[in-house]
Image (cartoon, helix red, strand yellow):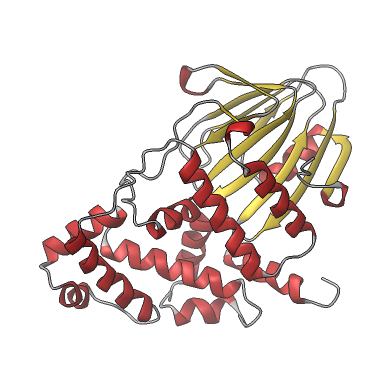
Length: 322
């Protein structure tokens, strides 16, 4: 049987539900809970961070209503392990039972009611992870962002997906190296795009257009620490300014400047996850982020945490006994 987080990952066991909810707000996603007026339900939660993923196993021990306006920068993949859960978002009501999967998009309002015996395994995925997986496949990134179709999926239909998650949980509990973690999170993102219906157009761009964008993309990758101008990109792509913006809109759904900013943030994130990063400030300045306050806020929106949190977690992993 596949184990999705063992006792080694337990944070709270038969604890106050509000304490568990506070922990979820800090690590898994902002929400509010409504508990029964009587009784003291005993809640439990297990949690691991794995690269940019958060892995969480949770039960509240009572009928609990969980609400949130939207998750904004993350997707929530929720697997029902026991009991059932009612979803009532956007006026549509669905009942999810053990063995079924619910995927919540970043702009979806959340309105979930757990049964008393409900237990879930939740994977928190940042938006940029799915976007990068889409681009690696050379698929067209939707302008409004990747959105999965809200429908019921059964684990048995997800061709080995739960076994993949079980392996990731094992690696998380055994301190896998950063390179291994990055590899696994990319596999998860690619699996979700392949297995679940979404608005991603799985069609490669026209050959000539694709070649032009690939030249520009490669140029950006090679000069990320420099201040790249739109004029330079026009020269590399051999197109006018208007055609350059159209090219980026079709290929990645954002403007050239927004794309370069995203890639700089990605590179900073990757460097902060290595043992060689001496400080957040140094890495940020190396990539042209001169206003550290705005940089930190952009980083938080992209990755769901502050750059200092990423850096400290990496330092803890490499510290003796960490």
